[in-house]
Image (cartoon, rainbow, N blue to C red):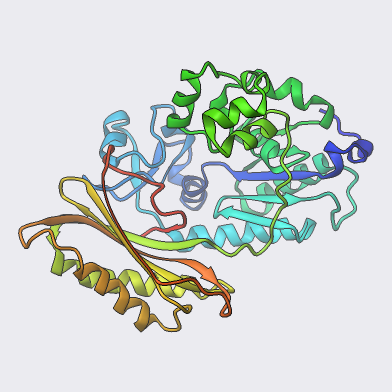
Length: 386
């Protein structure tokens, strides 16, 4: 698809955004570093009844193996799968190399995770004439220098670029021109909208929405009636409108880590895990420009009941010891009896603020029943641990 440099003159096309997404990143790093794994169904996961899949090669995906599914399910779907324990040190190193390539072209880079990022290439450092060429050059450099592949979407905004990057995976590129936006969007099933999960999709189906075109046909009051404040967002997205900028050096909203135990443990034996996880989270939080004011604790019972506890203090935490003390205190507030056993514990920091900001102290407790064996979205920014 050809892109004219003059496309940036229109209002919708005033920005040129690239969404770059590495292909089966963790599994691809493993296959790159171990030639015996190339062409094989590789599953990145600790093998065990409580492990979940971190990543799957495209050879494994043909059998239905997907990230976040239980490892035992992956093993049943693909008995020939080769299980490789994750090595996040190597994945982070590879991710850093990818980001260095991004920064050759623009400083406006917003990482979303180790394997994907938004880039604003409205202006690029090398003076390449089109965003399409910038994306193509980035993908070529990743392939030639790192022996990995990336897919890319090029569009006038982040929302469209995110959809486009998935269009020709793996190792592909797709461009949405400003004048093509409506023709591209309207036939799409609503599940293609980033952030629309199964629950929202089912809600939409109940009110007769199956495609983006169905959203487009509704007026804003009707959408707000059904979806509240999200109705305005849907109204804009159906028209290809997304004003969100690419934000470099974004402060993470939450940093957390969790452990699933090989065997269920009583509460007092969870404390050593809390200490180790708190040390890991505190070390990761030092990269943030702001201090955290909220400590969170998560426990999951052997019956798959999730309990969360959080405490917000008046000033940002200043030491790991303070963080650890609060996390342990939250744990000791749990009182389900000495006979209760737990299968998982997690700790986290959130509410990152500058020193002058303040909120009143808050203590919040919730108990929820899990509907699935594993939930991957309960912590926004998860540090993997074993």
